[in-house]
Length: 274
Image 1: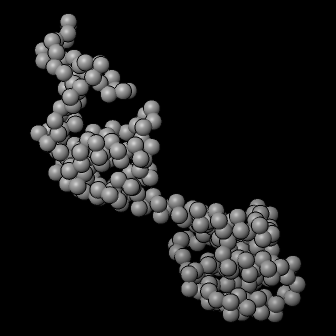
Image 2 (image 1 turned 90 degrees about the horizontal axis):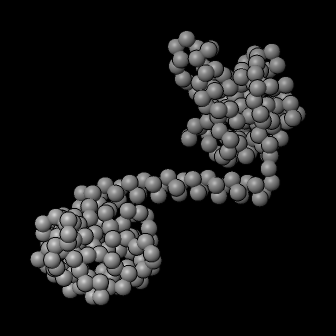
């Protein structure tokens, strides 16, 4: 039985070959190319011609190198890097990390504790395609999160009212709004009718629409008149001074706001971010 440890790296990999007794047979460095894999296979074949008698330890479960080792017929073990760190602490007082030493450590783990680890099983083309798609989806998710965080910080600095109007900044309607009106100045020039028309085209006429007035908080109150369906009225019994009521008959369909509610939220609606 031949134990091989491969310390993976982006440019070149360190490999170490141990025999059944744990003695070092050979050390070598191979590039991250097809020629490097061929060199490793030749070095292994010179010591152990039977692929099934070769066990390889590496700290990753996928990649071109892992695929090549599996295709060669070797028994490949993908060891958890954290578990390898624990082995390193047990065997090295300094805890230092070097590629040749780590390659030997990986091979020795198979010599002493092979039964504690599970080998990788070669899979078919469909399974491999699913794995590739899953990895690509994971990478795309990380990229999306990074871009969203950058967008959030930029909006906090330049257009904070947008974050109040569209809590889900990744929503398609929010992105389309920014595409058409990318600054607080442009959004502040919108009329109530234009904003309502845009929200309707984005499907925001559902029971729980976003707050359209929030997108216009960068506009001073004097630029947008009080809605005509809000009518000042006498104070209600028990209402605080200055409260008022509205005419339900003149309110837009589906809008139950009254003047008192409007006044209560007026400081929020008129906050300026320009």
